[in-house]
Length: 353
Image (cartoon, rainbow, N blue to C red; front, side):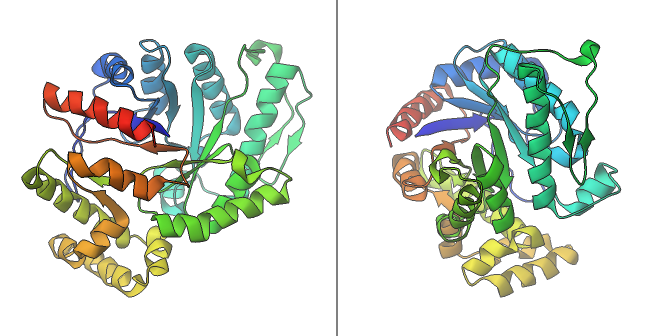
């Protein structure tokens, strides 16, 4: 199994309503080099408070073998042409090590944060978006006529001055973040890999997401096995029980936060926890944040997160990922050189799964 991480390296999950450790762009190069030295297979940057393409551009210049990508950029906030150019540049800079990760975000963010006035169902929109990006790449690489027309995008203008032309490794994988069945079906139709949200349990992935991927793949005559699954899990771990307890409580708060979010409710309903999710949503609306984590039992915590000491965590990651994941994110907090040495051992062991 391939093992990946995100920057900032060694971040501590802050739990609910606490500021995350900021990404220091001035140290990205050194951090990326250390990720490679630790033995990770891949490094990805999120679009939170920094532009992920900037982060990956810096990381590409200080690494040689790491797979690089963004997880994820918000597709609908950018035109397909803008995204296609960013990805083309990242692929050239990294010499073929880049993966384009796309996510849809929810309607409120697209309209009120990014200022995009129109909104249509995200699944059909994303299918068209991926097809449009690939049409642009085909034009640049193979001099194919650009004549793409869909419900959202009409692309038929190619000017030599703005055509970057072919590159040595043009096959850029596209990774789709997903949770609901229809977006999983779209991934099966047009994507190279699927990224379940961290709150997605093994049961939800097996029972709901993978069948939808198969449906999409079969619809377009693809082999479902060609769509890789890149797991991201909520992880609580540490060198001893005392450290583990504190980190588990932070993850408990994160589970409660996800449970109160309507977009993720389907996962909780799949486990018979729909009523609890609705109660948590009510508490969130009333800003009663501190009352929420205690409502997540230990059984629920272990259902939605991977919890264990350093001695236990690899076996529990295997239980979560075996047979369904081709790669997994393994981002855990480290506070000393000794712990970083242990992390390198953990990565190597997990890769052998």
